[in-house]
Amino acid sequence: MTDVEALRQQVAGLMPKVRQDLERLVRIPSISAAGYDAEPVRTSAEATAEILNDAGLAARVIDGEGGHPAVIGSISAPDGAPMVLLYAHHDVQPTGPEELWSTPPFEPTERDGRLFARGAADDKAGVMVHAAAIRAWDGRPPVGVSVFIEGEEEAGSEHLPDLLARYADHLRADAVILADSTNWRVGQPALTTSLRGLVGCTIEVRTLDHAVHSGMYGGPIPDALTALCRTLAALHDERGTVAVPGLKSEPSDPLDLQEDEFRAWAGVRPGVEMIGEGGLTERLWTKPAAYVLAIDAPRTKEAPGQLVPSVRATVGLRVAPGDSAADAVGALVDHLKASVPWGAELTVLDSFSGEPYRV
Ligand SMILES: [Zn+2]
Image 1: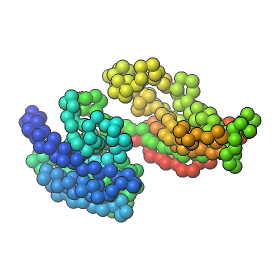
Image 2: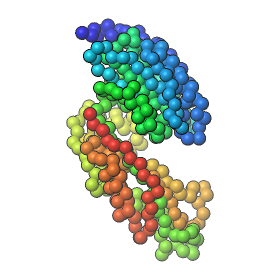
Image 3: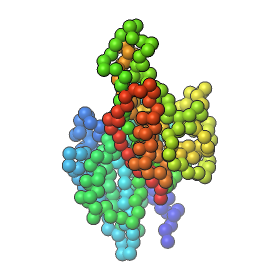
Image 4: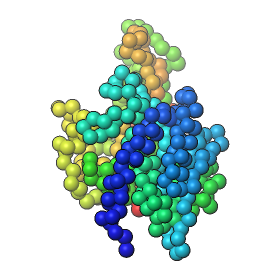
């Protein structure tokens, strides 16, 4: 029988060390995106392995062939006890424009009781959750533990299938805990038992062989950017409900989440309406969501007086549990093709898909 109160006290006593280790990790700019220096990602993998070793786990850095290094480690199971696989990732997203940060992105700074820095939450805190759990048991938890800390989650996990295959024996487990999700609200822990899948595609819309002068040709001839805007507008109906036919959704129990609170977290501007139908929990967890991720088109500062001949856009779709990623990306592509106006040419250049999940 576990003495929960003793464990709680043990965890509280560990927090200064956990905080110190977290700050050490977030000072390493382990950006995994293409075009950034790969060396800090290796430094971050090495630091992660050290922290886990220090917590009582035999951990080491492993190389994904052509990818960023991951960290694996394990503690064997006591007789008859199950194995639990602990997942997190030690790489981070690029910072974006640094002048938009209130404090430097790789300098952990406490404000209002929270620690701010790139990766402080996503997902170096996840690494620390696992290390702290092992420390809380003095390195001898009542279950066997495997740890897998990925180094390129933020860059699309291209080498993850290879690593999973190569280290299958090491990673075999009865349960997996991913510490890369969200708390329900600050100070209130949560278990995530379902996640929407993620699919999308990049399309090109073309109306002309080449650009032509808008004064000489504008009127009878459609430009590609207007055709793209009308195509993208078909992703939602007037209320903002996803209008792609054939996507599945499910009911969901309402949770204690108020619209005002949710708007404030997201920073929604005062007059902007919430879109879609049904409860907030359903719209967030068990219904699809569609959005435009990017458009390649002439820049406003350089806009010439021409009819734009071709443009590209990337569209994303969150797929409800119970749906299939392949069906959803097929439905998305069919809908975009059916929605492009005036006979404009629509080509799908690329697509991506990840399955939804429910425990
Ligand atoms: Zn993450």
